[in-house]
Length: 431
Ligand code: SPV
Ligand code: MG
Image (cartoon, rainbow, N blue to C red; front, top):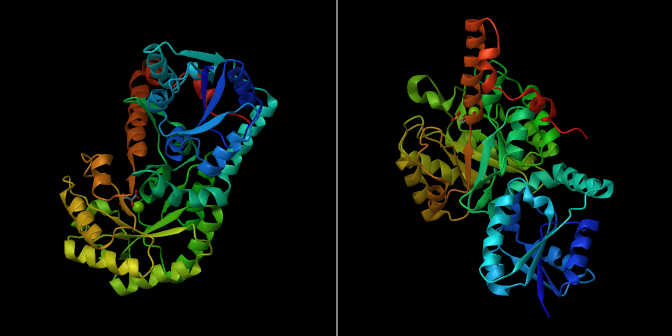
């Protein structure tokens, strides 16, 4: 009896999957791999049911003889374990980022004479509808809101990228790279006060009001499914912050980060070059506690951002605040620095982790950008935020195009650095 292997990464079975099982069954004993949660999240297929539920679902299908877990997106482990005579897969993976997985599988199979069977991919109205429904489900507030907490437990470090519009949201949602034998993508979005304000041509001083900030969130939510971390600046007056918490929670935002400053807030990357006042531990703890009291779900997170290193008040002050804000109810600590060297951030993380092994740590390596995600994770960081790089890359590109059109009195000279017209009109999917 030959062994036939196929890997599933779905929460819903449609006729395409049944077709694959049928093709597999013709060739021998059918072993279905359930792709693990950890691998699914790198695949933009965030699970809406648990790994155990997926295993039970696949095992219940006619023609399936055995279900195993495929831990990694690449097939190395399952192939070594099972040595299947055949691997069956829909032929849609010949194109796009998944082609790298297919190419690697072919090498593995070749080493012992296994065969790949590419079954014509079933794509019809019913399948399209199921795909769409799954996506819509992930975009619903109750699914999106809890996704950040889930990700923290599922991946060594959650990677968030700045978004300030529907378009940048789509970039964070959809960008996938095939790098070092793995697919990779961002896990979450950061609605930065700096970039949201900059996109509106305003300074980052809490001038863009909450109604406008919520509008940005809504634009992003309309076209994405990934969780959102909202930059709540100082949180404003405690009496106002409690309403902000309720609104964000209702919208399906996963977390708000508020910083321990008061009065006129300026961007942290100014450091001590401008006057900025840090709130006392007592004042800020009271704001966190009020926010936690206002919160209605267990999913939402209020993360306390500590500005002691930015304002040069020292490591001990930062650590004392982290401990106090956690006691006040903060669900995470963000520590910020504007030094180029990551040393003070890593020292903070190490010392914080000596007494607190669980409270999530968030960092924003805009200045200390030599540090890698792996190093941060080794020091106990749970979330890394790339806070402004999309805005900062778009601005010089747009400015140069504007200058060159003025210089040449026509647009021909800039044309070869532009997105082709055909692509810009088809960039956004229609329903
Ligand atoms: C933001 O992105 O708005 C932030 C991070 O708050 S920073 O600009 O570094 O202060
Ligand atoms: Mg900000």
